[in-house]
Length: 257
Image (cartoon, rainbow, N blue to C red; front, side, top):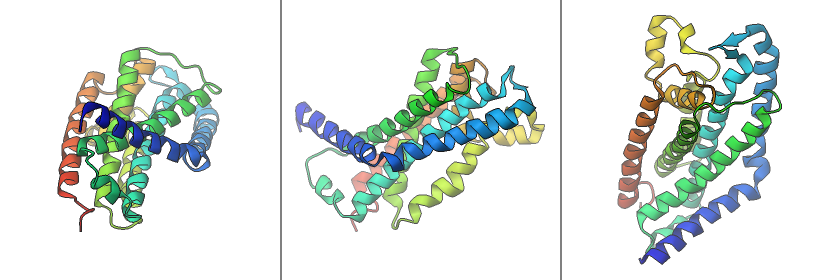
């Protein structure tokens, strides 16, 4: 395919993905907004007033970066895994596979669509948080890079999950039993400095800890880990998952059978 055709294919896939989740916004954009508002009220206002400060900041301000990142992660992942698996289930993905569209363009289109929803939800949650606390930006490039790369990473994860899934139940296993526990234990609601030494070491193997703290550093200027190490780890994971995704597409894993 020539560059113009490749660009057209990419834009078509991304546009379809954006139209898909905006058309059903009560299911895709509204629930995260409601859920995060409840977190702000319960953890920030009610419980946070009793906790006081954490990391030198008001508790509400401390948890906001983590809650924004949690919304971005779940929305990016959920968009791709549900969209691509639905295409598989309806056998409409076959039309895309028999077209001359390169595998890399297919992957990039779905990942970009997942990022559009993830970052859109993140923006909505950020605007909602302004009603509860005042946000500052300590390091804008770090904040932007961390949230964009994290969204891309979990969009790739959703794509792999959709490729491997054989039934609808399979697309809920990873978010329920892996993604959610890692997110809640990733320093969203606390600093790992509060944990005993052993559990601090255990927390350090949680990749979401680095993403949450990298984003928190960009907003507040505090982090439990080196924020540049966080960016490096995210980039490494993106490369690995991109290679895995392309290999699976090339082999037709979960599609051609």
